[in-house]
Length: 182
Image (cartoon, rainbow, N blue to C red; front, side, top):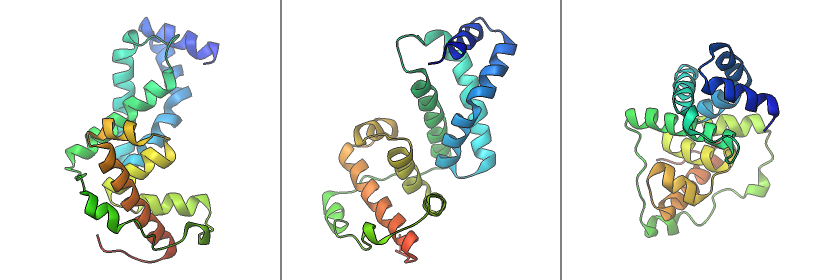
């Protein structure tokens, strides 16, 4: 972590508004982009971003910036804030049994046949239902593994793998122009 961020965090811990504004200015894009990927709605992402910073400033004195990865902590708060918002909208992430997992093992579209630009992939991810978009965003864009996703979403790791697999199939179908009924 850069020393100027450490200094800003130290000043923020003391409750200095100017330091909070500077910290916000340096970190808001990271938080906003994470929120937008998960919520797929600019106004909701902006609300989640604001809530994230409120939580960060409230809990900052509890965070040891020297020993832990501060930005991972910041992103985790943003992700949890977004998941809370999605839960409020009654997002349903349902555990699937192993029989359904077996049905999804044969890919509809071969990945190597897809040559798409990054923007097309992001657009396709954003067109998916909340559950699939969240799952793919956490794994593909945020770099979470199945264990971390299962902890965050309060599902089993096998359910996370299954939902990721189904979401991936939906994504591949969307990218190839095919529609799979949900």
